[in-house]
Length: 282
Image (tube, rainbow, N blue to C red; front, side, top):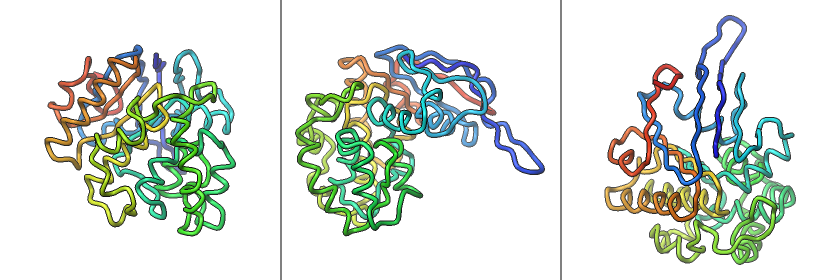
């Protein structure tokens, strides 16, 4: 279960303060698929980042299966996020210097090797930062995801072992059948990524990048899947396929799926819809 208690997020500078989230409380039980809807700028993406452990709230608590995630230390939170939370970013957040396949394998590498994998990927590279660093923090263990082309060979060499492991359970042990139970080959076919596997993000279409981001989020069989506008760059057929996949994961795996969307057709796949405005639930 995901439990939010009086979540507040305020951004302050020397002269002003802006309230982004205003006392949000919410419970999402296992097996439920929840849609969060509302106008642009109402705080939906910030709420998702708070639940993901990426953006510490000013006040309140986030508990996942009884664990208050913001009471964990930095590295402990990174490990917990890697093993329990998958995030599909609205801007995809693929690492530019890694191929599609290597990007998708990142959570498995971090789950299997922890900080060592992050160190290998970041060695000699640009360090964690921007889209790459954010992706590593959410879908890996928070290591140096900003790799250069030279260090991408580390991701490639580790991919086989991570793939065979199928992800990691919350206790760090190997999980069978990663990628929502489909395995690496199955998810590649399901998301129509076979032709893109060897391409770098700059060589991929927007739809391919979005599908790769979804595959990466599913890699370690997360207990909680958070998706920010997951069908925004997809055609109708692929969008339907993605939502059917999310629905199946919630139903058959007793996972929690939380989707931020403007699309009422996407919300129809969900068990429940909550609306936001001005940083609060209506």
